[in-house]
Image (cartoon, rainbow, N blue to C red; front, side, top):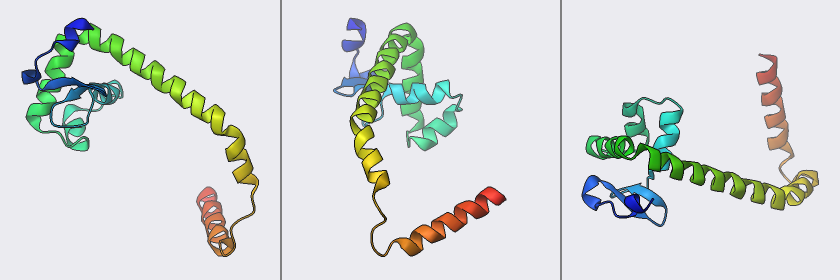
Length: 125
C-alpha cells in the first residue's frame, strides 16, 4: 500500500481519510468497486455517482493499473465494515427489541391500520 500512498493527485485519485477517493468528490474507489462487482455498466455507475466522464475514466484506469493493491485494500475495507455492522447490530439488539414491544404512539393507530391494509393487499396480489 505504500505505493498507493505516494500516488500523485494528477491521476484523478487521491488518498484521504476515507481512503482512495476520486478527486473533487467524496466517492471512494471502494464504492466504485462495489458497483463493478455487482456488474453495473460504467455509464450507470457514472450517472448514479454523478461523476464526469473524465473522473470515471481516471478511476477505472487507476483500478486497472493498481488492481492487486486496490483489491487487497478493498477486502480490508469490507472486513472493517462487516465488523462495524456486527458491533452495532449486537449493541442495539436489546434496544430495538424493546422499541418493537412498545405500544403505538397516540394518534398513530389510523396510520398503522392503513399500513397493515396495504401490506395485506400487496401480499394478496
